[in-house]
Each structure stands twice: as C-alpha cells, then as structure tokens.
Image 1: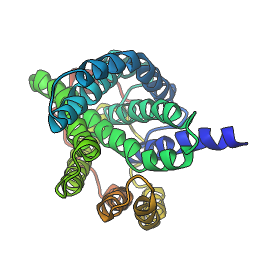
Image 2: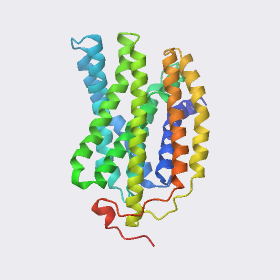
Image 3: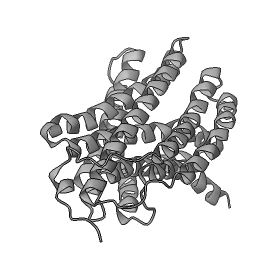
Image 4: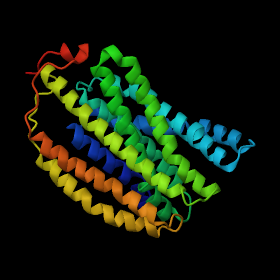
Length: 320
C-alpha cells in the first residue's frame, strides 16, 4: 500500500499541471501525441541523469566559492541539460507526431514533456528515503511547478516561431534560452540557501518565482489566442470556443489549494520560512485565476481575420 502512495505522490502533481495545460489549450486527453510527449519527457529525465551526475562531480571537485558553486550547479548541471533535452524531445519528436494538427497543440506538448520529466525525477527522489513524505510534498510545491512554468514558456515561444516563420530562428532560440535562464534563476536561490544562508536568498527566490509565473502565463495567453485564430482560419480547429464553464469551475477548484499549500510549505521541516508559504501559495492562486480569466475570454468572439501564420497552418484544408 505504501508503494502505491509513494507512486501517487510522485505522479499526481505533474498530472494536475498537465490537466491545467489541457484545459487551457482545448486539447484532448485521448491524444496519442500528448501521452507520447509525457512518456518521452520521463525518458529524457532518465537519459540526462548520467550527464548531470558527471557535471555535478566536476563542479563539486572544483575550487569555486560556495555561491559560485551554486550558480554553476544551477546553470550547468540543472538548467542547461534538462531544458535542452526537453527542447530536443519537443522539436525533434513530439511536435512531429501525426496528431499535432493545431498550433495550440505545441503548448500542450511542451507542458506534457515537462511534467513527464518531473514525474521521473520525483520517483527517483521519493522511492528510497525514509522521509519520502516530506520530500514528495516539497517537490510537489517546488520542482513540479517550476518545470511546468518552463514548459509553458518553451511551448509559447516555439508556437510563435511556427506562427512567424520570418523570424523563426530568433523565436526557436528563445524557446530554448529563456527556459534555461528561468530554470537556473529558480534553482540558484534554493542551492545558495544550502551553502550560504543569507536573508536575501528567499526574497530573491520569491521574486524570481513571481516573475517567471507572470511571464509564462502572459506569453501563453497571448500566444494561444494567436494560435487559435490561425487554427480556425485554416480549418484545423472548428470546435466551438464558448465552452467556458469547465475552465471557470477548474479555476475555482484550484484557488482554495493556495492556502493549504502555503501552510504546508511553512511547516515542512527542511524549509520553514514564511517566504516559502507566500511563494508557493502564489502558484495555485495564479493558475486558478488564469483559468477563470481564460474561461471569461473564451466567451468573446474570436477575430476571424487571416493571421500571419505558417504555411502548414494556412494551407490546411477545412475539416468536414
């Protein structure tokens, strides 16, 4: 029974974030592309493990100062390998699946890869320690949302690249570089807290978390609207846009989770600090408000004008 609980604790947070992305992008849980992206994300976490161990070993045996060591670990060991493998999976495999017909699907796939990656990471962390409950709880409110935010950012920027082929190289590069920067910035205060505790560390982490969440949600919302216009103009997506109630209900269901998560963070043995409670209660609140707002916007008529979309979207025949 305990093994089942451990597995659920590792998988549930990632699936919840994926459910948010599916609702936002009007995707389908039955999509083979979505499930493949999730599984490929988990495979990516396994594939990059030896690389991270090797890089971590090199940095640990260097002569860096504690804060420099934390910065190098955040950037070189965590951010660059992890976001690169997720980007390669998204662009090289997941996006090319036959089920990927709409521009909106790219955001859903990017988020699916990230929770898949986070799920396998969680299983590694919670499978053996005796205090797996605390580890599972701390990762549920830190690592999983962090991966999800980076997935939203990567998916939004890659979608822009597909919608703006004239500047595709810039946006594709941004789809890799910006998640790497956000990932490293998110990890650095957490690593610095372990080696050089200082009063500025957690406020910095809170600011980075807030900035990353606002940036990801803003990019995602603007990009999805452009992608929806392109999908409808091309005939790739003819489903009605007025099914707002599931989003509103989902948002209202997520909002009450913010306070318990904040209280949980403050009472975790390893991270007792009010900044954790404030920061981690912010994420479900932001996601809940975003879903409610998306539901309200979904009832507004979409612009039927011809978008400046990519050739594969513009040339698609209307669905019967």
